[in-house]
Image 1 (cartoon, rainbow, N blue to C red):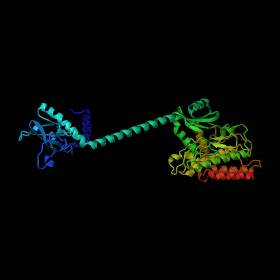
Image 2: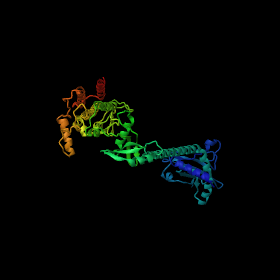
Image 3: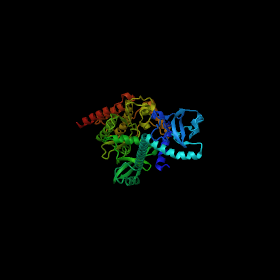
Length: 489
């Protein structure tokens, strides 16, 4: 009887051969010994095991009955008909010409070594002996193939295990990243809980809400984006992390807390430039006015000339006084809100020129939809909006008579609550009529005439209708430096 190990091996070998060609034992006695025609009882040592096309050939066996025992006379493979191709078992048939000679044909691997006589009792006795021999032969012939298959199988298992472990590790890492903030503190979760618990709403915007909150016993600004604005949040994080400029807001931390996408920013006590200028009887000194103008111009020049860590130009695309913060010492400004800012690639596409920003501050070519597809065209859009913010600052300087703050173009607008009416009015004022906010050059104050004229000329050069003729940010910084130096002398 077969041992369990040999039986398992026999089954495994046959499973391998199911997907390969048909294996037919071959025994040609005249090749073994030309002078002797020798019968054998098994294929222990004298057989070969070639493969044949299982669709067109079958195994053939010729046997002799000697003293009541069946011996192998010849084994091989031949092309055959459907009957042999369909036969899975070697059933001995007596040769009509030679009564002691038997033949069989069959179409399974090594089937001619496992024959069955017409007598069931005899067939069982023969099978138990022959199968044992087959196992020995297969083990010798297929040892290299068996070891190769086992090796490949083990390598596949190891590879699958490694990939699965890596996938689980990455999945776990992503879950942790989504559930916790980017803070390095070991108690970051509790810090974030305290931060959000202490948050007091300051400004509700279209895409985000800004809160005043407590972070590590200091006051900070917490900007929370809506989940639908994930891409905008990622964009602002990417850009702000690459920027190092004293007049551009810095990021303390960013991440996701629960369902909240947040940016943790420095808090500015004086709020936005717009709210600062709106304060009743607000008057800026000429020094303060020049400092404000220079800090904003230098920030835009830094962005447009690609001086950030990513070494590519950046356009803000939403410059306005409510996106500018006033430093705590009231001697500088800080540009904020980079949600719609964009990093300019070398080759621009149509998506870089979409009508985006705040309508009151949109350049005429953007309102009209006739912008040219160049880098300079996008810089010019920023410069136009910057000129309007410059105008807001200049109107509250001491070089002008005391005026009440007005937003750009407010002097031309007709009060109407409908947004569509506002948009059409801005288009009419800026594009059709070509108007700009009023610059008062002729005033009685002779002391500041030169400074007033110089600043008005710079503003005119930045908001001119022809986008190609607008002053560049680098030139504006240079001109302001000259003005500041001339006053120092």
